[in-house]
Length: 402
Image (cartoon, rainbow, N blue to C red; front, side, top):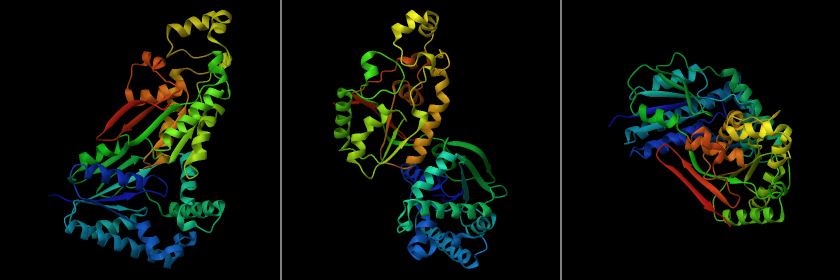
């Protein structure tokens, strides 16, 4: 059977390792033997905290450069041995940021085709979130959070000095690792398994997304829209029931909006999961009703009859005066969803506590419903949507939790 080397390329915190694992999972499902050879893991095993200081990565640090080169050569040897021993695809997971490093790979890996996969991501919010995640790694134990972030930021600065995008290499593909989009590709030779790998690169990869609407609020009871109300007593019961249900479910990341009703719904979950990462994203804030914030629909009908009639004629394309509409939500909700999934990486479970209009737009992303039907997607407060979306599996179910 044909064999292949895949070399990841990109600056730190750009999603290389997550993508490498997805490639492995997707190809293993096809019956292939796939190995990942991660330079960072090897470095931590061999050198420990000696390689934590940012100065180890300074381009002018000859000793640090030599040690990194030794580790890269060792992983190359492991990859070659893996393919020689019956493996099908060997993935070299490292920055491989310089043309010199990639030239070394091309010179050493001549027994089978070599494909470079470059991960690009310049979203400042995601880079900051990735810094927070990196700062929690065991190699930074003993440092304060601020010290760890500063250390890793300096490391990234040094890598940026060395970094050169793919250009003259023989076979490569450049990927937007947030949008799952091919930006550019160059195939100078026949690459085994490329069509499978390409499909993996552009596929949504959601292991388990639990999409929840916040609990009942005072505005829900009064029939008012928008605002920033708190949960009712019943809404707090719903939040407690949600936490009890998910006590038996593996969830490592919880995303909320910046509104109180979303964070209050997450509070019991947070209390029961001290190690779970919780993050509020403004992209998940409920639709802005503009001048109609806090109003009831019957008030809008009596006080702003033209606006009420326009909304009734076309709910999807209607935009609240000085506010938003479903039609204008798509970009920000899509951005929020992509950010959340990138931050969660390869997490086994992600819980998102949103709002009615927001959750409808997220469901639209996966369901491809007609636009006129989006404002009518059912979003209950005592059930959640469980979504799985990978290259090989699609699952949708509505699950009660109380």
